[in-house]
Image (cartoon, rainbow, N blue to C red; front, side, top):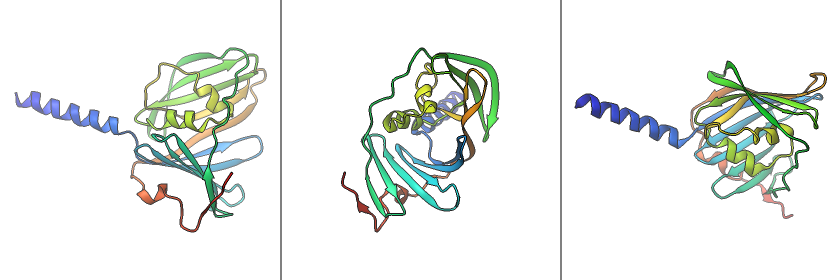
Length: 213
């Protein structure tokens, strides 16, 4: 009986922990053919802050966003001008042709997390993107992608991958031309810290003025 109770307690604890989702910081680099930038997600419950660091000076924050996922709200931050405002959601990008999703058999460990390979191909758009996806407790990620509604193909094609876990998140993704394999963009997580950020990270910094649009 004691073993059954202990098992039930452990199962309940793990279920509760997973339901809480991820809290901590995630550092990643996003590269294009022109440059590479450092970015940091700070996550606590359903609040997310994204800091984008400078290309020439990687210690300076050039811009950022605060995502309130339950409220469906995105605020942008401009440290140079000391202003903030509400980000207006744009019309979703239309995909030409058909995206074909293939789940590979390969796995890879990135930043301590086991990732599975998924490939999304679109012949008409001459694009293939390979994602290495961790099925963990990153429950903030998919809602954030939908809320932010970015027009880059890495974000759009990720939405074409179905039947993955609620807490799935790509820790490495590479966009290439389908015809010649030329690398166009690359996103790679370099560090994940599970220490929850302070509540102040999700507040508008002191001295910022609201920019009316």
